Image (cartoon, rainbow, N blue to C red; front, top):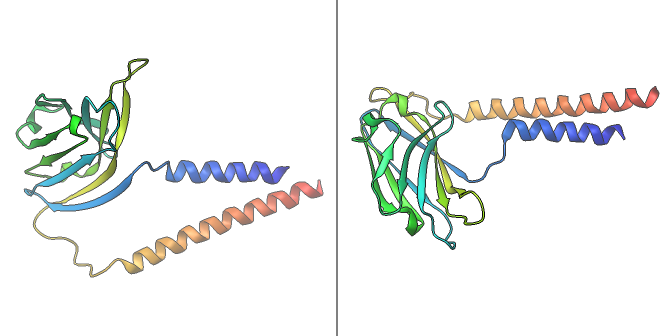
Length: 180
């Protein structure tokens, strides 16, 4: 019986550490002063979306913009209005959001959330198919590292050792409870 509790604990730890992924993540690297295009789309459905949000979710949790169907977009920070443009319309299930004159403070995880009308309750919010991790580097150069394979190897090894330790801890706890 204790092993069921252990598995439930292990499952809870894993889920809280990795979270539930609802879309794929694209990694985008840009330099300060450059632009980036974030394409947002969802599956066709009925009814069509009536609006879309662009949200930041890692370093700075906020709504960057909202675009209502066939209307101009609004931004959370009025200084960003001149740096952001939107092409397309939420009712067409896809649009492109361009952020220009990037600076290091734009580094974050971004995703679009489409709003679909639901007559029987609150409007439904549907995340787009893709999330974006935008890294904006200060200056005109990046790290001189030729590859990150050794870093990935070390991180993978550390994760493997951590999982092994969790498994061994669970086994020890199961055996200790059997003797009592």
